[in-house]
Length: 266
Ligand SMILES: NC(=O)c1ccc[n+]([C@@H]2O[C@H](COP(=O)([O-])OP(=O)(O)OC[C@H]3O[C@@H](n4cnc5c(N)ncnc54)[C@H](OP(=O)(O)O)[C@@H]3O)[C@@H](O)[C@H]2O)c1
View (cartoon, rainbow, N blue to C red):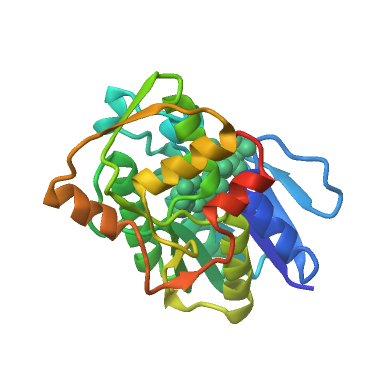
C-alpha cells in the first residue's frame, strides 16, 4: 500500500485530509506533538528546524503539505506587526526543506495547499504563501497546487475575537466565500489519487456573501448581537475582496450557516 505523508496533519485541514486518506492508503503525519490515532504512522518532527523531515519523507509516494504557521490565525486577530512580518520558518524555510527531502527521495507528487488570491498578495502571510508556491513549482518534484478560500473555523475565530468590542466597524459590502475544510479535504484527497496536476481549480464555499451577510448569520448563530458600523469599501478593497473569492471554481457544499449550526465557537 502506498504511503502518503501529510504535514500539518494535526491542524484543521490536515485532520480532515487524514480522515479521508486513511481508508485508501497508509497515512503518515509529521507532527511536533504526535497524536494517538493508531491508524496513522506518526513521525515526530518540526519543519522549522528540519528535525524528522528526512525520516517522514522516506518511502512515501505522495506528500500533502498543509503545515503552516500564522500567529494571527492562531490568536484570531491581527496585531500591527502582522501587517509587515509573518515568520517564514515553517511556510518558506520548512517548505524548502521538505521539497529538498522529497527530491532526494524521488517522491512522485507533492500537493501544496495554498490560498485563493495569493497572486496579488496583500500582507506578509500571503506573500510567504506565494513564495512557497514558487519554491514548489521550481523544485523538480512533480506537484499540484490547491488553493482554497478562508476556512469557516478561521472566520468564526476572528469574529469571536472581534465581538469582544461593542461595535464592529466593517466594510460590510466586501464579498466573501468561506469554505469548509472538510469539503476541501475531499478535493485534496481526489487530487492525491489523481497525481500531479499543476495548478488545480480554485476551491471555495457554496455561496458568495457580503461581509455584512456573513456577520449577520454569525451573530444570529452565536447569539452575540453587536452593532455593525458600516465602513466604506473603496474600489481597491472591493477588488481585493473579489480576488479572495472563486465563484467560478470548484465549490464545496457546506454553507456558512450550516457550518455554524454544526460547530461550536472556535
Ligand atoms: N485557515 C484558512 O482559512 C485557510 C484558507 C485557505 C488555505 N489555508 C491553508 O491550508 C493549510 C492548513 O491550514 P489550517 O487552517 O488547517 O491551519 P492550522 O489549523 O493552523 O494547522 C496548521 C498545522 O501546521 C502545523 N505546524 C505548525 N508549525 C509547524 C512546525 N514547525 N512543524 C510542523 N508542523 C507545524 C500545526 O501543527 P501543531 O498541531 O503542532 O500546531 C498544524 O498541524 C495551510 O497551508 C493554510 O495556508 C488555510
